[in-house]
Amino acid sequence: MTSALTSGELGPTKSDGGGLEATGVTTLQERQLAVTHWLLGAAEDQDLARSQWDGQGGIALLACGGILAAVRIPAHMVWAVAKTDELEKVDVFLRHWFDGGAVFMDLRTQLYYALVPGSASWPWNDRDFPGVECLRRDNYLGVPAIRLTEPKGHAYWCRPMESPRDLCFVDEVEELVRHGRAARAEGGSQ
Image 1: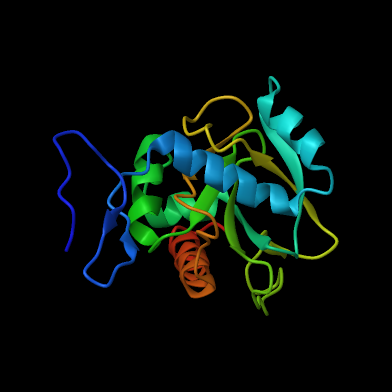
Image 2: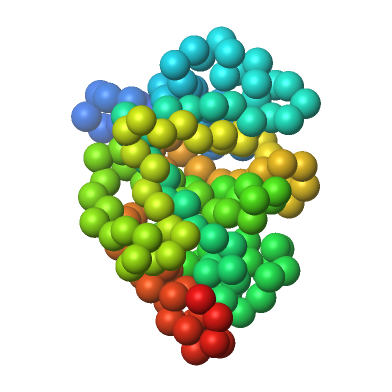
């Protein structure tokens, strides 16, 4: 028999099978802590990465090719598909485009990074998609602290990672890049 919760009480309850059922709500802070801990799995020096995220810039250097890889996409391609370069509108567009996953933007270089599994296959090269590259083994990436979700500073999460291993599907990234290339070609620029 499931035990009843009193008003405002959250916690595990007993199920009919005698096991425990989760009934609690995970807070944003708890999710961010879990994501940060998972991302630290890509750091060669976890203490250094933590201090970099806590520092003024909030960017830590992570190794690609293990738990994650990243597809680097020039902003002009993303903006062409979103039909705007207003960052807040582009962020909304990306939240709708991807079925889960995480994307951040380097504001200084105007590059988007879609995080994908480290084992992801990306057969395309610069001739196929100029300016697009999949960063895998032997690449390092400056990743913003998970708390940075506003378009200011050096980089921010425009589609934050909601939970550990919340990575983009490679086919959705590829489709975004294909649409970006087509939209840029229609507009007369490459």
